[in-house]
Amino acid sequence: MKRSIYIMLAVFAIIGMLAAIGCSSGTTTPTTTPAPTASTAPIPIAVIAVQSGPSEPLGEQEFLGAQLAVQQINNAGGVLGGRMLELHEYDEGYSPEISTGSYRQVVEAGVKFLVGPHDATTAYAVIPLAKADNVIYWDCIAGTDAATVPGYYKGLFNSPTQEKQAVLAFCGWITKQGYKTVGCLALNGDFGQQEQAWIDYYVAQHPDSWKRISQVFYDFGLTDVTAEVTKIEATNPDLIWMDVFSGAQAIPAVQRLQQLGYTGVIACDWTSLDDGQIAAQGGSIMNGVVGYTGFMPDPSIPQSMAFTNQYVAYCQSLGLTRVPGDYACSAYEGVIAYSKAVQLAGTADDNNKVIDAIYGLANTTWITPRGIQFQMLPGGLELDPGVYIQKCENGKVVIGDFFPLTKADYGPPYVPAGFKTLLQQEQEAQGNTTH
Image (cartoon, rainbow, N blue to C red; front, side):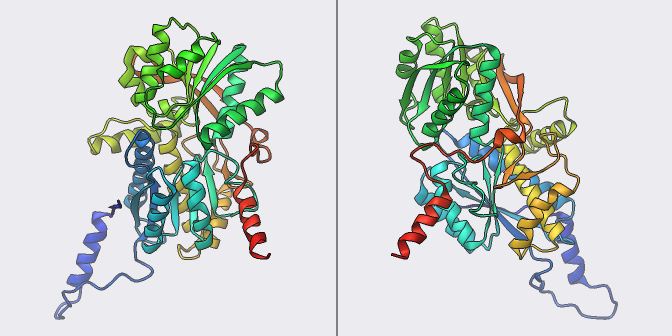
């Protein structure tokens, strides 16, 4: 289902009325409003994200982050001398079929910039279509280097925290804390399998750090994972790392571990704690649970708190009590980056120029809510200063620690065994057509 949001300035409407009234006396002005010209027409952009189900809070973050950015841009006068951004929202639907159907609506709406599906399966279905249509694709954290490998599509951008770096940083934090044994509850799908492969990669590179002594996969949609965590608890690891995505999964699992008398550290994938809702829902049950993220409201960073306060106020205007998480920040930065690039390129109609301008933003002054100068690495990865270690305390998520990332941590693309990059898939398809 398509949801369209048209966030336009009231002053824009007033200007239109003044033009209709006319300013020369003694003349008759037509009562019909002329159609917008190319120089004044709104610029459509779009978000495809989940609108229901266990990951709906993540989709909500993407929608809200994009909405806030559009509101700020339009309230400041738009781009290119007064063109407003027009935001369209579509459903990701947890399936390639629904996502590609939404993408077809994106094309019909004339959209040239898309904050796309973030799930690996749906993203990999839509990204090749966007490349073929030269639509700029801003990916809020799809899970692998298989998408943003250099040489595939220059118009594909990936905003932090990309899951590979998040996992490797959290692995480093586990080493820093001195934990020696880890048990993992993992999603039985490409995202979870890749996450576990990155853990394997880290442990292989750091053989004296810690060991994963238990691993249990669960099927997505199985909200009661208490039986699975019971198996992991039986191995008595120092830390239990749960790759779960909603309060319906996380809270009962944590409660079951407590009932079993587990006294080690419990960690959730960063998406589970990201905007604080699960901590609030779980209350004292979630006390001490940790996670990791590329963005948290950080009082030491003025840009972070400015964004947070604006986001909270915007949500309150909609009757929502929300704090921004990584998905909200990523969508927000994507829309802001697009608007700045359009202004820098001097056009919204030539995406090749706009794509070059996004990379060119590194030569301008823009300290993002993450507290660093905006910069895209080769392959379209936005530079991330590091990973926050989240901690649940009395129904809230607070900063427990910070683990820095450097350019070297992004390194060359790493694709786990059994997975192919989109570039490899494209090359194989082209090879098949020539035989």
